[in-house]
Amino acid sequence: MIVNKSVFLCELEIINWQRKAPPAQSIDRSIAWDNLEKVVSQCTACPLHETRTQTVFGVGNKEASLMIVGEAPGFYEDQQGEPFVGRAGQLLNAMLQAISLNRKDVYIANILKCRPPQNRDPAPTEVATCTSFLQQQIALVKPNLLLALGRVSANYLLQSKSSLESLRQKMHDFQGTPLIVTYHPAYLLRNPIDKKKAYLDLQLLQLTLKNCNRSRGIEN
Ligand code: SF4
Image (tube, rainbow, N blue to C red):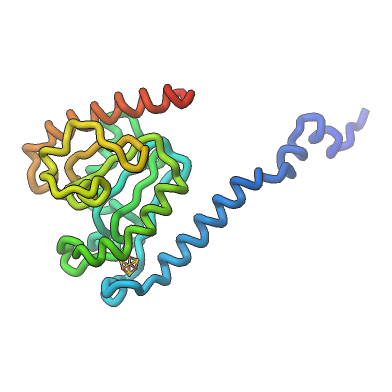
């Protein structure tokens, strides 16, 4: 007996599955992401647009449980348009692997979307101007847990002026989302002696992420 191909595929629910429209909410989210990325790519709101090669928006899983927030693009990020590439990016990947996470499992973004010349610290006015984009990214990802990398990121997210050392190994809160602080990988490249302390922070991160996911019914 010859089976009609489309009937056969329908039986397997392949055609129905392919034609099933995505839920309206996911379309809205997708449009919101596209709009935000477009606005960022054309932004000239602070002087950093004059010296950038391109904006560096963010990368990774847009529905991640863990969102990582760094400081600003460096030379390689500015060239490639992706956060945390180059040696600091490789170290971040290794840090994630150390707690059984992969770069593609998390969402990664920076406080600033354009590179400050000579990788200087972001100026307060640049942070104030740019961070509405990060706020929107966090609202779209809705992570279960935030990881702030480095003093600039931690101080912005926590609206603090504390030293990084005093913020480590504690649970913080960013607008209702738990937040953990650790060293920026670029700092660890310059100060490898602190890698052991960073590993302690990563262990706290792993445990907290597990608990956050469990409380929201997500398998780890
Ligand atoms: Fe715009 Fe942010 Fe780039 Fe400044 S750093 S130009 S605010 S995207």
